[in-house]
Length: 96
Image: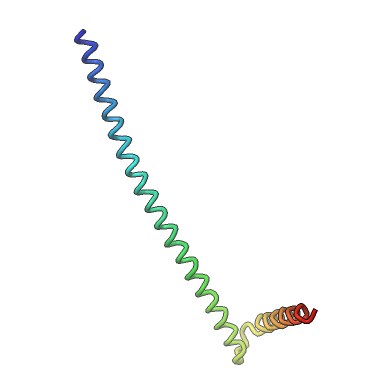
């Protein structure tokens, strides 16, 4: 009978250890999920900031072209023509 009690006690200890380990892993998982969420929000903020800087760069590049810079003149002319076409399209829709 003593052997059975020892086996049961040993089994209870192992189950207790497994349950404690499970709790530790759940807590660690929760921390990792929170860290991932924070990293994703930081990444989104950086993406928005990058888009904003790219837009500012393109605006500055266009402004430099308009001011007489020979660089990217063709690109600026194409953008201006595209804007004019878009405005013409809007005007035609409004007059319909």
